[in-house]
Image 1 (cartoon, rainbow, N blue to C red):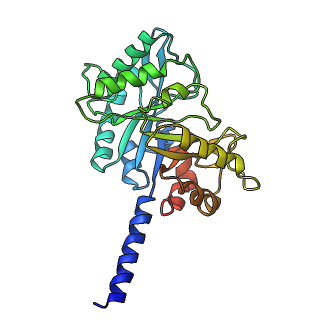
Image 2: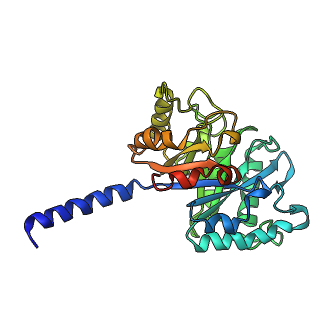
Image 3: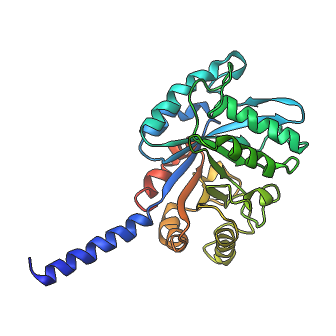
Length: 295
């Protein structure tokens, strides 16, 4: 082999490594529309690297925590325990599955630090590595908890800290969050500054002041830079609606995402990928299929 050929091979190898390190994942929210198909089918599509089960939408204020998976199953009759099979199937494919708590329903709050610790222990025993006789999603052990918090009292530092404590000495429990793009987030700012969160998918939609605007992208870029430089998380993701129908505003076409947004956000060493809301609208639009080779 000639020295010139060897040098070219080395350069190509290094370039391949660079592009591989910048390769991101697509995250999707599943659970809020029965028309989106099963969790098993979602993961078998090969489109997603992380799936957030949405939502545990009731907790705190003395209420018994409750999941709501829209038309998928009825938790009151233990009907959602069958989702366990889908969780196992996803994990067997190397796909992480989180339980997302909160959402836009407003049926949750944490009235005190003690209540936050109690909710953390409920999550640990019913969805993670603990033990309970009434696990709502069956015997599957989820990979972590996603904080999609849009209201309530602010005791999420205690909740995150207690979850982290409970997982010590066992399997890794991922903590993720979906804050709104205005910085700092109204509800999760203190929790996010703890350094306990692995992944943060910033919602760049329903927030015109920091969404991507092709005519003037400066507010988006400023927001992204502030999030990635201020919050001590491992990776950050661009959160977007999967179609125009999925959110009031903030939709970015796949062409603009690939030609303008991704080249910019990939400049961050903490770039992780793209989060999409949600699975059903992604099915309708084909958004993830059009971007996955570029993410």
